[in-house]
Amino acid sequence: MSLIKLTRLEKVGFGAGDMAVNVVISSMFLIMTFFYTDIYGLKPEDLGIMFLVVRLIDAVTDPLMGLLTDRTNTRWGRYRPYFLFLAIPFGISVFLTFSTPDFDYNTKLVYAYATYIFVTIMFTSVTIPYISLIGVLTDDPKERLSANGYRLFCAKVAAFLVTIVVPILADADYWQGDKALGYQVAMGLMAFIGTALLLFCFATTKERLTHKVDSRSLWQQAKVLCRNDQWLILASVCLFGTTGYVVRSAVALYYAKYYLGGDAAFQSLFLSVSVGAAILAMVASTWITKSYCKVKLFRLSQIAVGIISVVMFYAVSPGDYILALILYFLLSFVVDLHAPIFWSAIAESVDYGEVKNKNRASGLAYGGITFFQKAGMGIGGWLVSSLLAYYGYQADQEQTSQALYGIALMLCIIPGFFHTVVGFIMYKYVITDQYYDEIKPELKTIALNN
Image 1 (cartoon, one colour):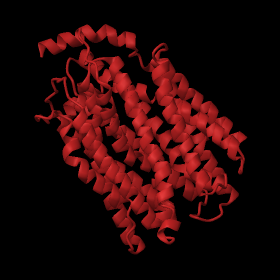
Image 2 (cartoon, rainbow, N blue to C red):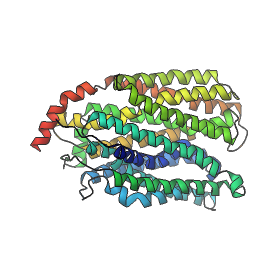
Image 3 (cartoon, rainbow, N blue to C red):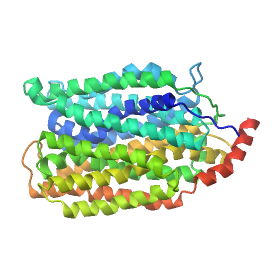
Image 4 (spheres, rainbow, N blue to C red):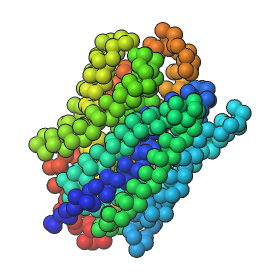
């Protein structure tokens, strides 16, 4: 069976697509909660409700987008046209979300809802086609894993831009004390970069494979998908893992500023250390999985995150800059060892489902994963906002010991618990490289019959 190899340029172009969408997702993870409470001026309890409401909208838009991609057929392919035609609306939505109008509180809350819904819909509209794209670029699991390594490396570069460029460019000193204007300009630049990267991804990738799509209704496809036990495992992993990741990422800036007492430069360093560790994890994961079982690495890395999180919670006290940086670097490195494995596993679980159930619902499968990712984002955002309010957090003020305890709990123990659960769930996942090789002949037979 001939396997399709990808050029380095195409892998870079594929990675550029994730770099574009991570301008949004990194902002959501790393600065959006802080922006809304300390810059935009929303109350934490209002912010938590907004995060949940928008995720309910995702419950509708995600599967609909999956079905739409299944029914798309153009001269550019099934997925790439969305990058071409939605790149500019995507950039506009990012810019508007990080703009702060001079309205009264209630009107600002309405504006926040409207722009956050807009950016979420645009995010869905490019992300679901993007994560589906790898399944039609190549049929080689090793090439998919390699391409996802490029992808996740580029995603972390986007996170670097958000953590370094945005805080520096948004510095109030540049804008005569106007922090809101600073964030608008900084994220406007990120929006422009994201738009350009989506167009670059469109120009440098090529859809080579076609799959027969299940033409049945959403409900019928959902029933088929729910019989794919390996996809269900990945969906639950995505939900728990994203929740833990969002809680830690969303509170990191609060931790650096209030718990550790760092200035703006240290805050940027703290966030950047996490991103740097994650980039190294992408490289390390690709290298390790050449000789070590990717599923075992997935399991053990997530359980290790729970252990490191507990150590950091008890070992780091306010003002312990160096120890905090070391442990946060280690934590961020270990937690992201699984990332290339997870995203390549989705395509393999879709193939597994086709063999098991004799039909394919890839659009809904990818849309479902994105939904669980966003559900985790919503739960994580709501959890952070609710706990900030519960522990008495006050924006841009010296915090009480109770508030500092809550911030430390959210950076360490709570996300550590979620990642430990992920590690144990993965003991039910069976699609190793050897297993996938065994089902390839049947996949080929199905393709020939279609």
